[in-house]
Image 1 (cartoon, rainbow, N blue to C red):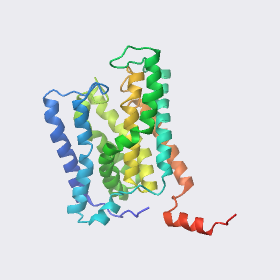
Image 2: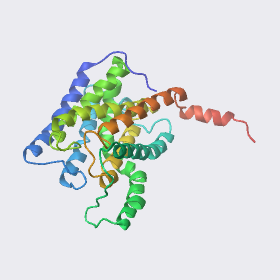
Image 3: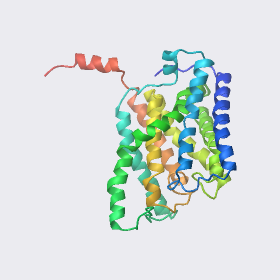
Image 4: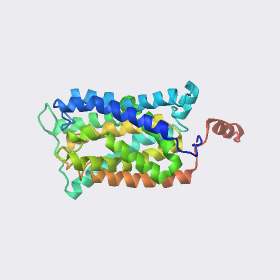
Length: 306
């Protein structure tokens, strides 16, 4: 893993936050003031395009600050922002397998606790066995296998900023403080959207608090994976896998989940991500740092031949 600096540099952090929050809210607030709503994530089209566009603002802000304030050339910028696949492709396979299981746990837990019912609602079709079968046999597998790669395009935009730029520059504060500060800022960044129904329709103020908590909980898992595998691309892939599950099939199967308590963005989601993050932390610590390409080549070269 690339060594982190021992001192906290305030100027680049403040410039990154000013650009990220300023540009994002400059786009969102006028649209929100003109009546744009984000209550129904399964039926939106125009708002979806806005969400996809603003996801790249943190990444672009990070690129600008790194290039013009830190004055890094391309190679230094790429290394600083961790723009690499990482030290193990196994982490990507793990993401494809693990994220859907975590979402299943979130929604089954919500169902068991009474925060919502299994009541499939497929827009544009009549509910029935064939429709449900197509969701489970076609839409769900596609969201698992293809969803992370499609959503990587947008998830990477956020993660170049939050995990590639912000996280390593907060690490001089220590993991607990760095993770907490990053989670709160990441949550507040979503503020204008949450006030207009994004993720927590009907709960604008409580939704912002819950979003900060969710960003901290999910961030525990995401931060550990990013630091261990030294890759913001992996972070974007994980983020993409989560978005593929969070804004698709599960909302169709469980449309009436309580936004603050159930589903992937409520307390059940927070609980599952916290447990996953703690288990991930312990597992990665036991595994130790992943082998570099040269180490793997050395092992292969010196391994006994049959």
